[in-house]
Amino acid sequence: MKNRQVRLAARPVGLPKPGDWQITDEAVAEPGEGEILVEVSHLSLDPAMRGWMNEGKSYIRPVAIGEVMRAGGAGKVVKSSHPKFAVGDVVTGGFGVQQYALSDGKGVVKVDTRLVPLPVYLGTLGMPGMTAYFGLLEIGKPKEGETVVVSGAAGAVGTVVGQIAKIMGCRVVGIAGGAEKCKYLTSELGFDAAIDYKHQDVKTMLKEHCPKGIDVYFDNVGGDILDACLARLAMHARIVICGAISQYNSTEGMKGPANYMSLLVNRASMTGMVVFDYADRYGEAAREMAGWIKAGRLKTKEDVVEGGIDAFPETLLKLFRGENFGKLVLKVGA
Ligand SMILES: NC(=O)c1ccc[n+]([C@@H]2O[C@H](COP(=O)([O-])OP(=O)(O)OC[C@H]3O[C@@H](n4cnc5c(N)ncnc54)[C@H](OP(=O)(O)O)[C@@H]3O)[C@@H](O)[C@H]2O)c1
Image (cartoon, rainbow, N blue to C red; front, side):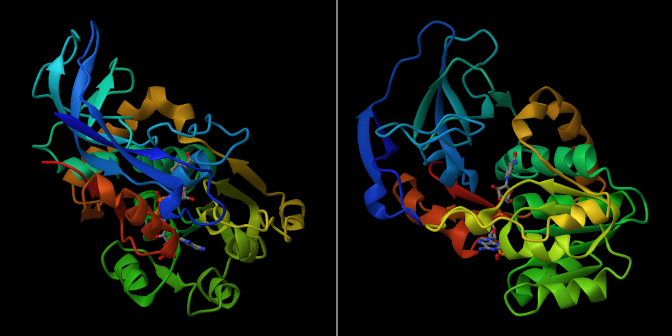
């Protein structure tokens, strides 16, 4: 049995190119005492992967040149020398971009596919859903009647942020690229309004849809959209800095917010969040969100690409071209 893997070959400049990756085959390893072997079926493709490919200090160490690319994934335990896992268990964990992963069980979670399909455990009930839940509720602290704006609104994190904000009784405005995504937000997910940043002027539309200003801005994109939201803050607004995908492939350095003095004028705050800080509370969030899914209050959307391991480099680029609609997942096995 061979284990096909995608390794980082070079640190990209701008968008990752085919030459930044190396596809390798090696023999499938045998689990030692306290280890499991997982046959990976689905990979989570995340914008953060672009940051992990860079050198330099961050919230997590960079992927080393020659190392199997870091990735969350889901699959089945096929061999176990671990007391907590049995052959046949369906699990999620940080398995990397490869067909078979050895694990000591740390961060590996057993999931029940009778409740929701497996890809949902990489999206709404996985890392992106946790990001939305804790970022919005712990940092955004939305109150009933407030106006919440979220960018990257039709994506894995954004769809969940907007729907939780609706559950909290807020007015919700999503910002996304294209009419189809915007229509989905208002007609399927119950957002009050959506702004198509590719075809509409965001500043003008924010004025129209947020007449009393923005109380919570959940920022997934950074750049010009962050600046437009800063210009429209309500008093005591909270900005959640979750990501800045518009800047991840920039070759000219990050574009910082010009309108930051709006924080002073409005006694507002802007706070960064990293989902891993809430790892010991994932269970609590997953239970509450599973309840909302069951009750029909929280809809999930996954964009599953049937490509196999070799399709990883090209599929990752969908995130930066806005070609994914919902949580981007790559199917790599049965
Ligand atoms: N802080 C944390 O712990 C944490 C954890 C998870 C994710 N994140 C961050 O959350 C954000 C969303 O992640 P996700 O997994 O939910 O991805 P996603 O939204 O499912 O996919 C990325 C989306 O970003 C949008 N996008 C791409 N380039 C853009 C640009 N130049 N300007 C504006 N939008 C652009 C595209 O949507 P459109 O078609 O609408 O342009 C694309 O579909 C990312 O910034 C990610 O890094 C942070």
